Length: 599
Image (cartoon, rainbow, N blue to C red):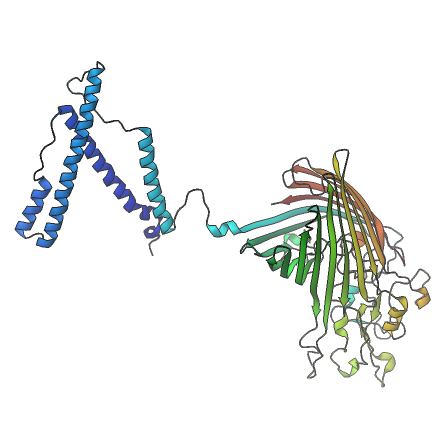
Protein backbone atom coordinates (compact mmCIF):
# COMPACT_ATOMS: atom_id res chain seq x y z
CA UNK A 1 0.00 0.00 0.00
CA UNK A 2 1.28 3.47 -0.94
CA UNK A 3 0.75 5.74 2.12
CA UNK A 4 0.88 8.88 -0.02
CA UNK A 5 -2.22 7.72 -1.81
CA UNK A 6 -4.23 8.40 1.33
CA UNK A 7 -2.40 11.47 2.56
CA UNK A 8 -4.18 14.84 3.16
CA UNK A 9 -2.08 16.39 0.35
CA UNK A 10 -3.30 13.74 -2.11
CA UNK A 11 -6.90 14.39 -1.08
CA UNK A 12 -6.42 18.15 -1.44
CA UNK A 13 -5.12 17.82 -5.03
CA UNK A 14 -8.54 18.01 -6.72
CA UNK A 15 -9.45 21.06 -4.68
CA UNK A 16 -6.12 22.69 -5.51
CA UNK A 17 -6.57 22.00 -9.22
CA UNK A 18 -10.06 23.46 -9.10
CA UNK A 19 -8.72 26.52 -7.30
CA UNK A 20 -5.98 26.97 -9.93
CA UNK A 21 -8.51 26.70 -12.76
CA UNK A 22 -10.79 29.21 -11.03
CA UNK A 23 -7.85 31.58 -10.61
CA UNK A 24 -6.91 31.23 -14.28
CA UNK A 25 -10.47 31.94 -15.38
CA UNK A 26 -10.66 34.92 -13.04
CA UNK A 27 -7.36 36.25 -14.41
CA UNK A 28 -8.62 35.83 -17.97
CA UNK A 29 -11.76 37.76 -17.13
CA UNK A 30 -9.73 40.47 -15.44
CA UNK A 31 -7.39 40.87 -18.45
CA UNK A 32 -10.29 40.85 -20.83
CA UNK A 33 -12.09 43.42 -18.73
CA UNK A 34 -8.93 45.55 -18.43
CA UNK A 35 -8.30 45.43 -22.16
CA UNK A 36 -11.88 46.37 -22.91
CA UNK A 37 -11.77 49.30 -20.53
CA UNK A 38 -8.43 50.61 -21.85
CA UNK A 39 -9.51 50.47 -25.46
CA UNK A 40 -13.03 51.71 -24.66
CA UNK A 41 -14.29 49.28 -27.32
CA UNK A 42 -17.79 47.86 -27.31
CA UNK A 43 -18.22 44.12 -26.62
CA UNK A 44 -17.73 41.89 -29.64
CA UNK A 45 -21.05 40.49 -30.87
CA UNK A 46 -21.64 36.86 -30.24
CA UNK A 47 -20.01 34.62 -32.78
CA UNK A 48 -18.15 31.43 -33.13
CA UNK A 49 -15.17 31.30 -30.85
CA UNK A 50 -12.06 29.30 -31.59
CA UNK A 51 -13.27 26.58 -29.19
CA UNK A 52 -16.61 26.30 -31.01
CA UNK A 53 -14.86 26.09 -34.39
CA UNK A 54 -12.48 23.42 -33.01
CA UNK A 55 -15.34 21.27 -31.75
CA UNK A 56 -17.17 21.58 -35.09
CA UNK A 57 -14.01 20.46 -36.92
CA UNK A 58 -13.58 17.42 -34.60
CA UNK A 59 -17.18 16.39 -35.24
CA UNK A 60 -16.83 16.74 -38.98
CA UNK A 61 -13.59 14.77 -39.03
CA UNK A 62 -15.16 11.97 -36.98
CA UNK A 63 -12.73 12.34 -34.10
CA UNK A 64 -15.64 13.09 -31.75
CA UNK A 65 -18.82 11.09 -31.74
CA UNK A 66 -21.70 13.21 -32.89
CA UNK A 67 -23.69 13.02 -29.64
CA UNK A 68 -20.64 13.80 -27.49
CA UNK A 69 -19.54 16.59 -29.82
CA UNK A 70 -22.95 18.22 -29.85
CA UNK A 71 -23.04 18.19 -26.03
CA UNK A 72 -19.59 19.82 -25.87
CA UNK A 73 -20.61 22.30 -28.58
CA UNK A 74 -23.70 23.37 -26.63
CA UNK A 75 -21.64 23.84 -23.48
CA UNK A 76 -18.97 25.90 -25.32
CA UNK A 77 -21.57 28.15 -26.90
CA UNK A 78 -23.22 28.75 -23.52
CA UNK A 79 -19.87 29.60 -21.92
CA UNK A 80 -19.01 31.97 -24.79
CA UNK A 81 -22.30 33.81 -24.40
CA UNK A 82 -21.83 34.07 -20.59
CA UNK A 83 -18.33 35.44 -21.17
CA UNK A 84 -19.59 38.12 -23.59
CA UNK A 85 -22.31 39.17 -21.13
CA UNK A 86 -19.75 39.48 -18.36
CA UNK A 87 -17.51 41.64 -20.57
CA UNK A 88 -20.44 43.91 -21.35
CA UNK A 89 -21.18 44.42 -17.66
CA UNK A 90 -17.52 45.16 -16.92
CA UNK A 91 -17.39 47.62 -19.78
CA UNK A 92 -20.40 49.46 -18.37
CA UNK A 93 -18.80 49.67 -14.95
CA UNK A 94 -15.53 50.94 -16.48
CA UNK A 95 -17.38 53.57 -18.47
CA UNK A 96 -19.01 54.86 -15.30
CA UNK A 97 -15.65 54.97 -13.59
CA UNK A 98 -14.14 56.93 -16.49
CA UNK A 99 -16.99 59.41 -16.37
CA UNK A 100 -16.48 59.88 -12.65
CA UNK A 101 -12.77 60.33 -13.11
CA UNK A 102 -13.32 62.92 -15.87
CA UNK A 103 -15.76 64.83 -13.67
CA UNK A 104 -13.16 64.83 -10.91
CA UNK A 105 -10.44 66.19 -13.18
CA UNK A 106 -8.61 62.85 -13.67
CA UNK A 107 -7.53 61.90 -17.18
CA UNK A 108 -6.40 58.61 -18.60
CA UNK A 109 -3.11 58.69 -20.36
CA UNK A 110 -2.15 56.37 -23.21
CA UNK A 111 -0.94 53.00 -21.87
CA UNK A 112 -2.93 53.25 -18.61
CA UNK A 113 -4.73 50.07 -17.52
CA UNK A 114 -7.75 50.32 -15.27
CA UNK A 115 -8.40 47.42 -12.88
CA UNK A 116 -11.87 47.22 -11.33
CA UNK A 117 -11.85 47.71 -7.52
CA UNK A 118 -13.11 44.84 -5.32
CA UNK A 119 -13.97 45.95 -1.78
CA UNK A 120 -12.55 44.26 1.34
CA UNK A 121 -16.01 43.07 2.28
CA UNK A 122 -16.37 41.21 -1.03
CA UNK A 123 -12.87 39.75 -0.75
CA UNK A 124 -13.60 38.50 2.79
CA UNK A 125 -16.84 36.97 1.60
CA UNK A 126 -15.07 35.12 -1.21
CA UNK A 127 -12.37 33.88 1.19
CA UNK A 128 -14.91 32.64 3.73
CA UNK A 129 -16.91 30.83 1.07
CA UNK A 130 -13.83 29.06 -0.30
CA UNK A 131 -12.67 28.16 3.21
CA UNK A 132 -16.09 26.81 4.11
CA UNK A 133 -16.17 24.65 0.98
CA UNK A 134 -12.68 23.23 1.63
CA UNK A 135 -13.34 22.53 5.31
CA UNK A 136 -16.70 20.93 4.49
CA UNK A 137 -14.88 18.58 2.14
CA UNK A 138 -12.23 17.92 4.83
CA UNK A 139 -14.83 17.03 7.43
CA UNK A 140 -16.77 14.84 5.00
CA UNK A 141 -13.57 12.93 4.21
CA UNK A 142 -12.56 12.86 7.87
CA UNK A 143 -9.00 14.17 7.60
CA UNK A 144 -9.00 17.67 9.09
CA UNK A 145 -10.84 20.18 11.30
CA UNK A 146 -9.42 23.50 12.52
CA UNK A 147 -8.32 23.73 16.19
CA UNK A 148 -10.03 20.48 17.06
CA UNK A 149 -9.00 17.04 18.29
CA UNK A 150 -10.89 13.83 17.56
CA UNK A 151 -14.11 13.52 19.54
CA UNK A 152 -12.99 10.36 21.38
CA UNK A 153 -9.89 12.10 22.78
CA UNK A 154 -12.04 14.66 24.59
CA UNK A 155 -13.54 11.86 26.67
CA UNK A 156 -10.20 10.44 27.86
CA UNK A 157 -7.78 11.93 30.40
CA UNK A 158 -4.47 10.82 31.85
CA UNK A 159 -3.49 11.34 35.49
CA UNK A 160 -0.42 10.39 37.44
CA UNK A 161 2.03 11.20 40.20
CA UNK A 162 5.64 10.51 41.09
CA UNK A 163 7.24 10.57 44.53
CA UNK A 164 10.92 10.29 45.48
CA UNK A 165 11.55 9.70 49.19
CA UNK A 166 14.53 9.45 51.53
CA UNK A 167 13.57 7.41 54.59
CA UNK A 168 15.41 6.62 57.83
CA UNK A 169 14.20 4.33 60.63
CA UNK A 170 15.73 4.39 64.11
CA UNK A 171 15.14 1.64 66.70
CA UNK A 172 15.66 1.92 70.46
CA UNK A 173 18.55 -0.11 71.85
CA UNK A 174 16.37 -1.75 74.52
CA UNK A 175 13.75 -3.05 72.08
CA UNK A 176 12.79 -6.70 72.33
CA UNK A 177 14.78 -8.71 69.83
CA UNK A 178 12.32 -11.59 69.72
CA UNK A 179 9.58 -10.21 67.46
CA UNK A 180 8.44 -12.99 65.16
CA UNK A 181 7.78 -12.21 61.51
CA UNK A 182 4.35 -13.82 61.47
CA UNK A 183 3.57 -13.22 57.77
CA UNK A 184 6.77 -15.06 56.86
CA UNK A 185 5.88 -17.95 59.21
CA UNK A 186 2.60 -18.46 57.33
CA UNK A 187 4.36 -19.06 54.04
CA UNK A 188 5.30 -22.42 52.50
CA UNK A 189 4.65 -25.43 54.72
CA UNK A 190 4.55 -23.61 58.07
CA UNK A 191 6.87 -23.55 61.10
CA UNK A 192 7.56 -26.71 63.08
CA UNK A 193 6.82 -25.90 66.74
CA UNK A 194 8.10 -29.24 68.08
CA UNK A 195 11.48 -28.53 69.75
CA UNK A 196 12.41 -32.20 69.39
CA UNK A 197 12.37 -31.96 65.61
CA UNK A 198 13.23 -28.28 65.02
CA UNK A 199 15.72 -26.16 66.96
CA UNK A 200 15.79 -23.25 64.49
CA UNK A 201 14.09 -19.99 65.40
CA UNK A 202 11.30 -18.69 63.20
CA UNK A 203 11.91 -15.65 61.02
CA UNK A 204 12.41 -12.57 63.27
CA UNK A 205 11.90 -8.86 62.62
CA UNK A 206 14.72 -6.33 62.90
CA UNK A 207 14.04 -4.28 66.04
CA UNK A 208 17.43 -2.78 67.00
CA UNK A 209 19.53 -1.98 63.92
CA UNK A 210 18.83 1.42 62.36
CA UNK A 211 18.16 1.76 58.65
CA UNK A 212 19.49 5.05 57.28
CA UNK A 213 18.91 6.95 54.03
CA UNK A 214 16.82 4.46 52.16
CA UNK A 215 15.91 5.94 48.79
CA UNK A 216 12.40 4.91 47.81
CA UNK A 217 10.06 5.95 45.01
CA UNK A 218 6.47 5.65 43.91
CA UNK A 219 4.93 6.12 40.46
CA UNK A 220 1.29 5.85 39.43
CA UNK A 221 -0.32 6.55 36.08
CA UNK A 222 -3.93 6.07 35.07
CA UNK A 223 -6.19 6.48 32.07
CA UNK A 224 -9.81 7.43 32.72
CA UNK A 225 -12.61 7.61 30.17
CA UNK A 226 -16.03 9.28 30.14
CA UNK A 227 -17.94 6.69 28.15
CA UNK A 228 -21.08 8.81 28.37
CA UNK A 229 -22.52 11.49 30.60
CA UNK A 230 -23.31 8.88 33.25
CA UNK A 231 -20.72 6.13 32.71
CA UNK A 232 -16.98 6.17 33.36
CA UNK A 233 -14.15 3.64 33.40
CA UNK A 234 -10.55 3.69 34.58
CA UNK A 235 -7.32 1.71 34.68
CA UNK A 236 -4.25 2.64 36.75
CA UNK A 237 -0.77 1.16 37.03
CA UNK A 238 1.48 1.61 40.07
CA UNK A 239 4.94 0.69 41.29
CA UNK A 240 5.61 -1.49 44.34
CA UNK A 241 8.20 -3.83 45.83
CA UNK A 242 5.60 -6.61 46.03
CA UNK A 243 1.87 -7.19 45.74
CA UNK A 244 0.97 -6.11 49.28
CA UNK A 245 -2.22 -4.00 49.31
CA UNK A 246 -1.12 -1.09 51.52
CA UNK A 247 1.95 0.34 49.77
CA UNK A 248 2.98 1.16 46.21
CA UNK A 249 6.41 2.38 47.33
CA UNK A 250 9.45 0.78 45.68
CA UNK A 251 12.81 0.62 47.47
CA UNK A 252 15.54 1.63 45.02
CA UNK A 253 18.90 -0.05 44.60
CA UNK A 254 18.79 -3.79 44.11
CA UNK A 255 21.77 -3.71 41.76
CA UNK A 256 20.02 -1.09 39.60
CA UNK A 257 17.53 -3.69 38.45
CA UNK A 258 14.30 -2.65 36.73
CA UNK A 259 11.34 -2.06 39.02
CA UNK A 260 8.00 -3.82 39.09
CA UNK A 261 4.70 -2.43 37.83
CA UNK A 262 1.34 -3.65 39.16
CA UNK A 263 -2.27 -3.28 38.07
CA UNK A 264 -3.50 -0.93 40.80
CA UNK A 265 -7.03 -0.06 39.66
CA UNK A 266 -9.55 -1.24 37.07
CA UNK A 267 -13.17 -0.15 37.42
CA UNK A 268 -16.42 0.89 35.75
CA UNK A 269 -18.87 3.32 37.33
CA UNK A 270 -22.39 4.31 36.36
CA UNK A 271 -24.88 6.89 37.64
CA UNK A 272 -28.43 5.56 37.19
CA UNK A 273 -29.68 8.75 38.86
CA UNK A 274 -27.96 12.03 39.72
CA UNK A 275 -27.47 11.20 43.41
CA UNK A 276 -26.25 7.58 43.08
CA UNK A 277 -23.00 6.15 41.67
CA UNK A 278 -22.38 2.41 41.34
CA UNK A 279 -18.74 1.31 40.94
CA UNK A 280 -17.43 -2.19 40.32
CA UNK A 281 -13.98 -3.71 39.88
CA UNK A 282 -10.90 -2.53 41.77
CA UNK A 283 -11.24 1.09 42.84
CA UNK A 284 -10.09 3.71 45.34
CA UNK A 285 -11.40 3.86 48.89
CA UNK A 286 -15.12 4.77 48.63
CA UNK A 287 -15.47 5.50 52.37
CA UNK A 288 -14.63 8.59 54.40
CA UNK A 289 -11.81 7.27 56.61
CA UNK A 290 -8.28 7.91 57.83
CA UNK A 291 -5.12 5.83 57.43
CA UNK A 292 -5.64 4.60 61.01
CA UNK A 293 -8.02 2.06 59.47
CA UNK A 294 -7.30 2.05 55.72
CA UNK A 295 -3.97 3.01 54.13
CA UNK A 296 -4.11 5.86 51.61
CA UNK A 297 -2.64 3.41 49.07
CA UNK A 298 -5.29 0.75 49.70
CA UNK A 299 -7.72 -0.04 46.87
CA UNK A 300 -10.89 -2.07 47.20
CA UNK A 301 -12.16 -5.01 45.14
CA UNK A 302 -15.86 -5.59 44.63
CA UNK A 303 -18.79 -3.23 44.25
CA UNK A 304 -19.71 0.03 45.99
CA UNK A 305 -22.88 2.13 45.98
CA UNK A 306 -22.28 5.81 46.78
CA UNK A 307 -24.94 8.46 47.21
CA UNK A 308 -24.62 12.20 47.68
CA UNK A 309 -27.58 14.58 47.72
CA UNK A 310 -28.09 18.15 48.90
CA UNK A 311 -31.18 18.83 50.98
CA UNK A 312 -33.91 20.69 49.14
CA UNK A 313 -34.52 22.93 52.15
CA UNK A 314 -30.83 23.83 52.65
CA UNK A 315 -28.39 23.66 49.72
CA UNK A 316 -25.45 24.13 52.15
CA UNK A 317 -26.24 20.79 53.83
CA UNK A 318 -25.85 17.51 51.97
CA UNK A 319 -26.05 13.86 52.95
CA UNK A 320 -23.71 11.19 51.62
CA UNK A 321 -23.09 7.54 52.18
CA UNK A 322 -21.59 4.31 50.89
CA UNK A 323 -22.50 0.65 50.89
CA UNK A 324 -19.71 -1.70 49.86
CA UNK A 325 -19.48 -5.44 49.30
CA UNK A 326 -15.76 -6.27 49.23
CA UNK A 327 -14.39 -9.79 48.65
CA UNK A 328 -11.20 -10.15 50.70
CA UNK A 329 -10.17 -13.69 49.80
CA UNK A 330 -11.51 -16.85 48.17
CA UNK A 331 -10.32 -20.25 49.27
CA UNK A 332 -8.42 -22.29 46.71
CA UNK A 333 -10.57 -24.13 44.20
CA UNK A 334 -8.30 -27.19 44.33
CA UNK A 335 -7.51 -27.49 48.04
CA UNK A 336 -6.24 -29.91 49.13
CA UNK A 337 -4.28 -30.20 45.90
CA UNK A 338 -3.26 -33.86 46.35
CA UNK A 339 -6.58 -35.12 47.65
CA UNK A 340 -9.54 -36.56 45.77
CA UNK A 341 -11.87 -34.97 48.32
CA UNK A 342 -11.79 -31.18 47.98
CA UNK A 343 -12.64 -28.71 50.72
CA UNK A 344 -15.82 -26.65 50.52
CA UNK A 345 -15.66 -23.03 49.45
CA UNK A 346 -14.64 -20.63 52.22
CA UNK A 347 -14.81 -16.95 51.32
CA UNK A 348 -13.80 -13.87 53.34
CA UNK A 349 -15.77 -10.63 52.97
CA UNK A 350 -15.94 -7.06 54.13
CA UNK A 351 -19.40 -5.55 54.30
CA UNK A 352 -19.28 -1.80 54.90
CA UNK A 353 -22.02 0.78 55.33
CA UNK A 354 -21.50 4.47 56.02
CA UNK A 355 -23.70 7.56 56.29
CA UNK A 356 -22.56 11.14 56.74
CA UNK A 357 -23.30 14.82 56.33
CA UNK A 358 -21.44 17.78 54.87
CA UNK A 359 -22.47 21.19 56.21
CA UNK A 360 -21.13 24.48 54.84
CA UNK A 361 -21.80 26.73 57.81
CA UNK A 362 -20.43 29.87 56.14
CA UNK A 363 -17.59 30.90 53.82
CA UNK A 364 -14.99 30.13 56.50
CA UNK A 365 -16.40 27.08 58.27
CA UNK A 366 -17.35 23.62 57.10
CA UNK A 367 -18.18 20.44 59.03
CA UNK A 368 -18.07 16.93 57.61
CA UNK A 369 -18.77 13.79 59.58
CA UNK A 370 -19.56 10.13 58.98
CA UNK A 371 -20.47 7.04 60.96
CA UNK A 372 -19.58 3.66 59.48
CA UNK A 373 -20.02 -0.01 60.30
CA UNK A 374 -17.57 -2.59 58.93
CA UNK A 375 -18.22 -6.29 59.30
CA UNK A 376 -15.22 -8.44 58.41
CA UNK A 377 -16.80 -11.80 57.73
CA UNK A 378 -15.02 -15.14 58.14
CA UNK A 379 -11.51 -13.67 58.59
CA UNK A 380 -10.91 -15.13 62.06
CA UNK A 381 -8.81 -18.24 62.47
CA UNK A 382 -10.34 -21.64 63.18
CA UNK A 383 -8.80 -24.69 64.78
CA UNK A 384 -8.72 -27.57 62.32
CA UNK A 385 -10.02 -31.08 62.60
CA UNK A 386 -7.29 -33.49 63.77
CA UNK A 387 -4.94 -33.96 60.82
CA UNK A 388 -2.35 -36.73 60.45
CA UNK A 389 0.39 -34.92 58.60
CA UNK A 390 2.85 -37.66 59.56
CA UNK A 391 0.72 -40.09 57.53
CA UNK A 392 0.83 -37.95 54.40
CA UNK A 393 -2.27 -35.79 54.86
CA UNK A 394 -2.27 -32.89 52.40
CA UNK A 395 -2.69 -30.04 54.88
CA UNK A 396 -5.35 -29.47 57.50
CA UNK A 397 -9.00 -28.48 57.19
CA UNK A 398 -8.62 -24.82 58.26
CA UNK A 399 -5.39 -23.84 56.54
CA UNK A 400 -7.52 -21.50 54.42
CA UNK A 401 -8.26 -19.33 57.48
CA UNK A 402 -4.74 -17.89 57.75
CA UNK A 403 -4.67 -14.28 56.44
CA UNK A 404 -3.64 -13.64 52.85
CA UNK A 405 -1.82 -10.52 54.09
CA UNK A 406 -0.98 -9.27 57.57
CA UNK A 407 1.39 -6.76 59.15
CA UNK A 408 1.70 -7.05 62.92
CA UNK A 409 -0.20 -6.43 66.16
CA UNK A 410 -3.34 -8.59 66.08
CA UNK A 411 -3.69 -11.45 68.53
CA UNK A 412 -2.77 -14.69 66.75
CA UNK A 413 -3.60 -18.34 67.36
CA UNK A 414 -2.29 -21.68 66.08
CA UNK A 415 -4.60 -23.21 63.48
CA UNK A 416 -3.65 -26.87 63.21
CA UNK A 417 -4.68 -29.70 65.54
CA UNK A 418 -1.88 -32.04 64.50
CA UNK A 419 -2.21 -35.73 65.32
CA UNK A 420 0.90 -37.39 66.76
CA UNK A 421 2.48 -40.48 65.28
CA UNK A 422 1.66 -43.25 67.81
CA UNK A 423 4.95 -44.94 66.98
CA UNK A 424 6.97 -41.78 67.63
CA UNK A 425 4.84 -39.12 69.37
CA UNK A 426 7.75 -37.03 70.65
CA UNK A 427 9.39 -37.01 67.25
CA UNK A 428 6.33 -36.02 65.22
CA UNK A 429 6.94 -32.77 63.28
CA UNK A 430 4.24 -30.16 63.96
CA UNK A 431 4.35 -27.48 61.21
CA UNK A 432 1.94 -24.72 62.19
CA UNK A 433 0.16 -21.75 60.65
CA UNK A 434 -1.33 -18.84 62.60
CA UNK A 435 -4.62 -16.98 62.15
CA UNK A 436 -6.45 -14.01 63.67
CA UNK A 437 -7.87 -14.85 67.09
CA UNK A 438 -10.40 -12.02 67.31
CA UNK A 439 -13.49 -11.25 65.30
CA UNK A 440 -13.85 -7.77 63.82
CA UNK A 441 -17.08 -5.76 63.67
CA UNK A 442 -16.06 -2.11 63.70
CA UNK A 443 -17.87 1.13 64.43
CA UNK A 444 -15.91 3.98 62.85
CA UNK A 445 -16.61 7.67 63.57
CA UNK A 446 -14.91 10.39 61.52
CA UNK A 447 -15.16 14.15 62.02
CA UNK A 448 -13.57 17.03 60.10
CA UNK A 449 -13.79 20.79 60.69
CA UNK A 450 -12.37 23.24 58.14
CA UNK A 451 -12.06 26.85 59.29
CA UNK A 452 -9.87 29.97 58.96
CA UNK A 453 -7.32 31.24 61.47
CA UNK A 454 -5.25 34.37 60.78
CA UNK A 455 -6.29 34.24 57.14
CA UNK A 456 -5.11 30.65 56.57
CA UNK A 457 -6.88 27.30 56.49
CA UNK A 458 -7.08 25.19 59.64
CA UNK A 459 -8.31 21.61 59.41
CA UNK A 460 -9.04 19.46 62.45
CA UNK A 461 -9.56 15.70 62.00
CA UNK A 462 -10.73 13.18 64.58
CA UNK A 463 -11.25 9.45 64.17
CA UNK A 464 -12.50 6.93 66.74
CA UNK A 465 -12.78 3.18 66.09
CA UNK A 466 -14.33 0.53 68.30
CA UNK A 467 -14.21 -3.21 67.58
CA UNK A 468 -17.57 -4.28 69.02
CA UNK A 469 -16.65 -7.96 68.52
CA UNK A 470 -13.54 -7.80 70.73
CA UNK A 471 -13.81 -10.12 73.73
CA UNK A 472 -10.76 -11.60 75.49
CA UNK A 473 -12.70 -14.62 76.77
CA UNK A 474 -14.09 -15.31 73.29
CA UNK A 475 -10.56 -15.14 71.86
CA UNK A 476 -9.29 -17.80 74.25
CA UNK A 477 -12.31 -20.03 73.68
CA UNK A 478 -11.80 -19.81 69.92
CA UNK A 479 -8.14 -20.85 70.26
CA UNK A 480 -9.38 -24.06 71.91
CA UNK A 481 -6.21 -26.02 72.44
CA UNK A 482 -3.80 -25.20 75.24
CA UNK A 483 -1.04 -22.77 74.25
CA UNK A 484 -2.75 -21.77 71.00
CA UNK A 485 -2.51 -17.98 71.65
CA UNK A 486 1.03 -17.03 70.65
CA UNK A 487 1.44 -13.25 71.20
CA UNK A 488 0.29 -10.10 72.99
CA UNK A 489 1.44 -11.05 76.45
CA UNK A 490 2.78 -8.66 79.07
CA UNK A 491 6.38 -8.33 80.21
CA UNK A 492 6.07 -11.02 82.90
CA UNK A 493 7.08 -13.80 80.53
CA UNK A 494 3.89 -15.76 81.20
CA UNK A 495 1.66 -17.10 78.44
CA UNK A 496 -1.61 -17.68 80.31
CA UNK A 497 -4.83 -15.75 79.92
CA UNK A 498 -3.91 -13.75 83.00
CA UNK A 499 -0.82 -12.49 81.18
CA UNK A 500 -2.73 -11.64 78.00
CA UNK A 501 -2.94 -7.91 77.06
CA UNK A 502 -5.02 -6.51 74.25
CA UNK A 503 -7.87 -4.11 73.52
CA UNK A 504 -10.44 -3.11 70.93
CA UNK A 505 -10.20 0.69 70.65
CA UNK A 506 -8.30 3.11 68.42
CA UNK A 507 -8.31 6.87 67.92
CA UNK A 508 -6.49 9.57 65.96
CA UNK A 509 -6.34 13.36 66.27
CA UNK A 510 -4.71 15.65 63.69
CA UNK A 511 -4.44 19.39 63.04
CA UNK A 512 -3.35 20.79 59.65
CA UNK A 513 -2.61 24.50 59.22
CA UNK A 514 -2.26 25.91 55.72
CA UNK A 515 -3.31 24.41 52.41
CA UNK A 516 -4.19 20.72 53.07
CA UNK A 517 -3.20 19.65 49.53
CA UNK A 518 -0.50 21.96 48.06
CA UNK A 519 -0.96 22.53 44.32
CA UNK A 520 -0.01 26.10 43.37
CA UNK A 521 3.44 27.60 43.84
CA UNK A 522 3.83 28.95 47.37
CA UNK A 523 1.18 26.69 48.95
CA UNK A 524 2.26 25.27 52.31
CA UNK A 525 1.06 23.47 55.40
CA UNK A 526 2.22 22.14 58.76
CA UNK A 527 0.55 19.33 60.69
CA UNK A 528 0.69 17.49 64.00
CA UNK A 529 -1.20 14.49 65.29
CA UNK A 530 -1.41 11.55 67.67
CA UNK A 531 -2.58 7.92 67.26
CA UNK A 532 -3.29 5.05 69.58
CA UNK A 533 -4.27 1.65 68.16
CA UNK A 534 -4.87 -1.25 70.53
CA UNK A 535 -3.92 -4.73 69.25
CA UNK A 536 -7.39 -5.93 68.21
CA UNK A 537 -9.09 -2.63 67.43
CA UNK A 538 -8.99 -3.42 63.70
CA UNK A 539 -7.44 -5.92 61.26
CA UNK A 540 -3.72 -5.13 61.07
CA UNK A 541 -3.41 -5.87 57.34
CA UNK A 542 -5.03 -2.76 55.86
CA UNK A 543 -3.78 0.39 57.59
CA UNK A 544 -0.80 2.74 57.10
CA UNK A 545 2.44 0.81 56.61
CA UNK A 546 4.66 3.63 57.95
CA UNK A 547 3.25 4.29 61.45
CA UNK A 548 5.13 1.83 63.74
CA UNK A 549 6.02 -0.18 60.64
CA UNK A 550 2.35 -0.90 59.96
CA UNK A 551 -0.36 -2.75 61.86
CA UNK A 552 -1.75 -2.33 65.38
CA UNK A 553 -0.52 -2.32 69.01
CA UNK A 554 1.01 1.12 68.38
CA UNK A 555 0.84 4.62 69.85
CA UNK A 556 2.73 7.79 69.11
CA UNK A 557 2.81 11.26 67.55
CA UNK A 558 3.68 12.59 64.13
CA UNK A 559 4.76 16.00 62.80
CA UNK A 560 5.07 17.19 59.23
CA UNK A 561 4.89 19.97 56.69
CA UNK A 562 4.79 20.63 52.94
CA UNK A 563 5.78 23.46 50.60
CA UNK A 564 5.04 23.79 46.86
CA UNK A 565 8.04 25.03 44.87
CA UNK A 566 6.09 25.09 41.62
CA UNK A 567 2.70 24.15 40.25
CA UNK A 568 1.99 20.51 41.21
CA UNK A 569 5.51 20.11 42.68
CA UNK A 570 5.95 20.09 46.45
CA UNK A 571 8.33 18.97 49.20
CA UNK A 572 7.13 17.10 52.30
CA UNK A 573 8.91 16.30 55.55
CA UNK A 574 7.49 13.95 58.19
CA UNK A 575 8.67 12.73 61.62
CA UNK A 576 6.89 9.79 63.31
CA UNK A 577 7.71 8.51 66.80
CA UNK A 578 5.92 5.36 68.03
CA UNK A 579 5.89 2.77 70.80
CA UNK A 580 3.97 -0.40 71.60
CA UNK A 581 0.70 -0.21 73.57
CA UNK A 582 1.17 -3.56 75.33
CA UNK A 583 3.90 -6.16 75.53
CA UNK A 584 7.69 -6.10 75.17
CA UNK A 585 9.26 -2.71 74.30
CA UNK A 586 9.34 -1.70 70.65
CA UNK A 587 10.14 1.95 69.86
CA UNK A 588 10.55 3.14 66.26
CA UNK A 589 11.29 6.66 64.98
CA UNK A 590 10.83 7.34 61.28
CA UNK A 591 11.97 10.34 59.20
CA UNK A 592 10.68 10.82 55.66
CA UNK A 593 11.81 13.56 53.25
CA UNK A 594 10.14 13.46 49.87
CA UNK A 595 9.55 15.33 46.63
CA UNK A 596 6.16 14.92 45.01
CA UNK A 597 4.96 15.73 41.50
CA UNK A 598 1.45 15.41 40.08
CA UNK A 599 0.32 15.57 36.46
